[in-house]
Image 1 (spheres, rainbow, N blue to C red):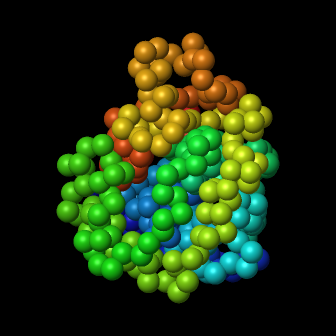
Image 2 (cartoon, rainbow, N blue to C red):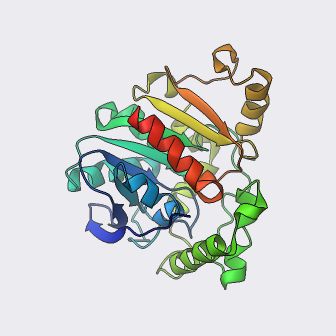
Image 3 (tube, rainbow, N blue to C red):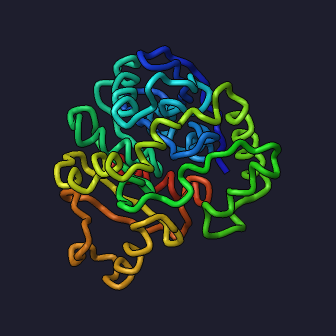
Length: 288
């Protein structure tokens, strides 16, 4: 199992100080954006970074308001600040164009960036992406800080389909990261701004990806897990299986022009459950 051996760095940007994990070298840049949660961070990609770094110059970034960067953002974080923060990170690192992988809420941010700044992306991977679920995700506002490793590990099983994939080694690594992020100053209320946007329908509707999807120009791979509980993926899974994976016959909004679609035999976090398989899939798509 590949683990995280990249180097940790910090960069001061307009809205916040940001941590990122860098691995690999060269000009084939790949940015990884993690999902939602006050204890979530760039470490979410811990088990795939090394494999990806064999082919790409990888930057796994603490999204604005998360991780070990600044956790108290004036009037934020918001969708607009977050997307601009990714662009500014690219500017600060001298990255004119990059490919981007976004998991869950990171896929939502990646979709917005691809729509707003098509000239900055080579390819896009939406990994179990949020922003496609019109309904407000249940429990999105119920953020909490775990008291110990057992509490930190309590929610991991919900994220995978094959429970045996949560080996003690993986659970220990994830729990250690979760506790470290929970201990950062301001962690508990660090996402209040964007949680309000996600949890308020009139605001959420402005940022949903549906109307933007037909205008995304970057070659895109959409991945989700067969056991992913987040809408709309249970519906997508049923249709994907009924059509034998031929989504050209789909009646659903699989509307990114020329996009490829892949259902993995996982839950909501293939980056934890099947990191080796995911790294191979990502490398083949991004290198094709």
